[in-house]
Length: 107
Image 1: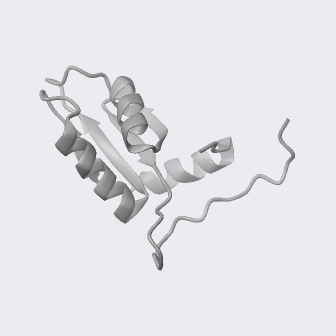
Image 2: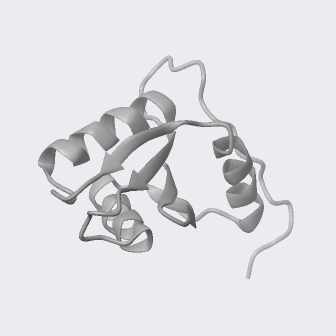
């Protein structure tokens, strides 16, 4: 997935009002946390995560690792929080996020 800067900005704006859904603690990123993140991404497409102080990860490291494991895109990292995005593949999902397309040609 290759998001443009305009699409990332749109997703960051949408994430501002969201609550934290996934919390990474001292146990790090395990199978259950990946399942929780996948379920949240399938239901919402845009998920805010938080890394607790006692975690072995920084927010940037956790974002990169969890994005890879969930096949999502890290949209933003600020302090101990980060935002992941993955379009849902559920058929008939009515509340999908529609991203603005950049009309300029990319080289």
